[in-house]
Image (cartoon, rainbow, N blue to C red; front, side, top):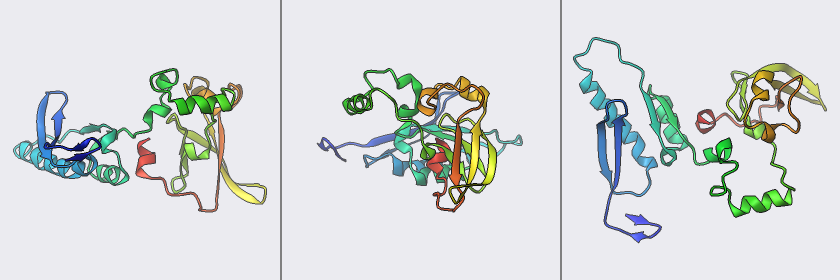
Length: 212
């Protein structure tokens, strides 16, 4: 395998296990460094294995929760898992930036981020519309913390442009761990407000956005 440290003689071992019973259900050795391309064939083989195990069972198949680390996260893999029938949870490689537990972590904060905060006088960058997960088809919106927002207006005219507006629930915004990144002042009467243009220009919500 060709790696960042040179070419080595070895394999990348990938296994899928039953977390409850600690049983390995599917395992293979791959002659490739990257993990992304191994997910789909591994899951297909897992399905075959589960079909054999359930061949003589009459009870309904229970919902399976499938988890994987960020090395398997890609748009193609998440689309594949969305159609697999498994309740899937696969982290992306930016999840630490959204996790408030890492905010005060000196080991995680990079020198580049420290310089950026110094230039901005310590003020964090507030979330923009790109950080909100707006589905134009279903007319729903979730904030960066994953909380559902309510639609406060549709086809609202502003500056010769029509917008759809959403507002966060006050009970959610008051206790949100991302409040300082989202609002300039603590909420008193309403939660965070956000609006999106009704011109169809906003990109389609990706599977990566849905997983976030």
